[in-house]
Length: 506
Image 1 (cartoon, rainbow, N blue to C red):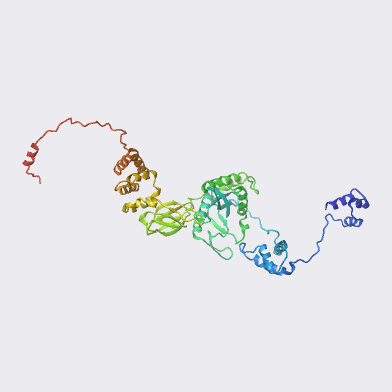
Image 2 (image 1 turned 120 degrees about the horizontal axis):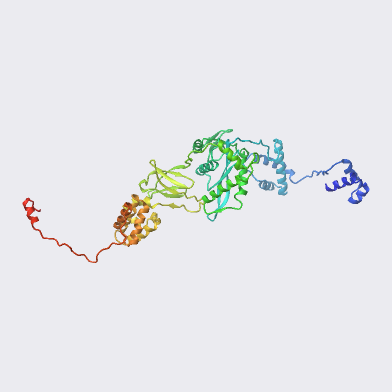
C-alpha cells in the first residue's frame, strides 16, 4: 500500500514519466498503468479457494458446533476436544484449521441472528436511588500467611456507580446477608430495587420468563430492607453489566498484586477504604464530577437503612451426651443442662450461636475449613461442664474442656490436686464463676496464690471482701505473747441462783 501511494504521488503530483517510475520501482509499465487507471487507493488481493483436509469433515464439525452452542458454558466441548474427536474419525489436519473454521462459523451464526461482534445491546439509564446491582466473584489473597481463595461480594449503585467490595470464605446465605448489611451501611441507604443473577442462595427454582421461586430467607431480608428483588434471565450477564464490569476492574485495582493481611477482618477494612478512595478518583463518565460527587447527590433518594438484618441460618441439632453439637465437621460445646436435647444452632459468618427455650445459651467463634482432608475441630467452653464435674470431680484431672483454664486456675489446680479432696475443693472454687464475676474470682485466686494460702476458705474470704469493697490491712500488728490484763473472779453464787429457780441440769 505504501508503494502504491508513492507511485500515485510521483505520477499525479510530481508529473514523473511512467518510464522513470518503472526504473525507480522495478515494476512493468502495464502494472503501473493498471494502478493509475483503476484509481484504487488500496490494492486488494483475492485469495484463491483451495481444497483443505477439513472439507470432508466440515458437515460433521458444523453438526457438532450446533449441538455445543445449545449447551451451558461448563458442559461445552472446547475446540481442542472437537479436534481430538475429528482425529479419532480419521482427520489428519492441524488444530489451527479447525479453530479457524469454528471461529468463522460462530461469526456467520452471529450475523444470521442479526448480531454483530459481541452482540448488540440497548444502553441503560437509571434514576437516582432506583437500583443497585450485585454479583459474586472469586479472587485470591494471603490470609495469615496462607494463600486463600475468597468469595467476593460486589455491590454497585446503578445511578452514581458507587461500589463496595467485601470478601468472604464461602458463598452461603449468612455471607450474602452480611454483605447486604455492610453494603447498605457504607452506601448510606437502600435503593428501591436490586438486580441479581439466579444464584442459589436467592433462587430455589427458575420458572418461565421472569418467574422465580425465591428462597424464604432471602425474601425475609428483602422485606426487611424494603426493596424489590429482580433476577436476570439465565446466562444474561449484560442485564447487570455495571457490576459485571466492576468485577473486572476490581481485579486490577484491588487484587493485583495479591494483598496480604493477618485475617479476613483486616482485609475487609482495607477493601472498604480503597473503594471509598476510588470514588473520589474515578470520573462518573456520564454526569459531571467523580463518583463521590454523584453519590453525594444520590443520598437524598436512598432510604435510610433500619436496624441491621439478623442474617443467620438456623439448624436444629441434638446435643450429644458429651455436651457438643456438630456443625460443618466441627463440634461446639453447649451447657450441660441441655445434653441429649434439641437446640437451635444459628450460623453467622463469624460466629455460631446456640439457642433454646427462647434464650441464648452460648456463642462460639465459627471455624471454617474448606480442606476436607483435615479432621474436624472441637471448641470447648469449660464453664459448660461445671454442672458435670460437681457430680464427677475426678473428671477434672483429665477433662479435655479444662485444658484451657485461665492461668490462675491452672496454678491453683496444681496446688489443690496434690492433697486429698483437692479435686472437689477445686470444683467448688470453679463453680464460683456461676454466681460471681469471673474476673473477681480470678483476682481472689491470684491474691490467695500470692499470699501463699491457696485454700477454698481463704479464697472465699478474699472474694467476699472484694465484692463488699473492703480489703484486709497489709500488715497486722500482733504482740509476740498474749498477756492477761484482768483476771477472772470465781463466783459460785451463780449456781445458787440456778437452784433458786428450780432448774436442774440434765
